[in-house]
Length: 214
Image 1 (cartoon, rainbow, N blue to C red):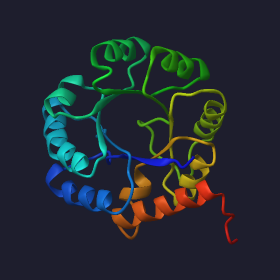
Image 2: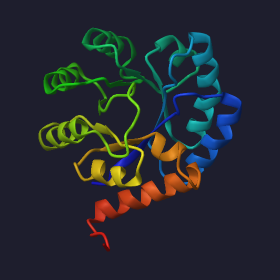
Image 3: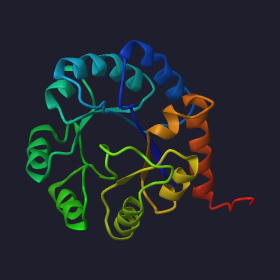
């Protein structure tokens, strides 16, 4: 199985200046999903950002997801929603939006929370905390939860990488279905297009299980 990329917007998004960067990233290689998840914005601001970015994602056959706001998701005609507000909010979203829309579960800090989300019918289980700044490597708990989930459960898992490209490989080697990338792409020294191409090359190598040359 080959993992795919789950791209997350930067924490601060100015739609006008960010749109060309997103276009370049999505044109550079395979990306499964785009999660629109800027920090601390009003609903109106999130709406404007989503309306600018959703069409770019969908043009590239990338599923566009909005974090936490079903009204914005619907008005922007996004493909789904990412829920971080707990089990009750997740179940309400699943009941209201599936099967037409994707409903993913995040902010899962323990095994029992992940199992509850899977049993509720979440379309994917996201390991890693969006509200924390990424370190160079993926968080150890993210890796441990992802490896545990991949071995035992069917619903797809998403693991949040760190800032380094090496962390993309670490996440992929757990057996995760998707590797979430944020800072590793938007802060890449050669730009987001180069980052997406490099990350996909890593995922190809992991899928083929070709050892590093080191």
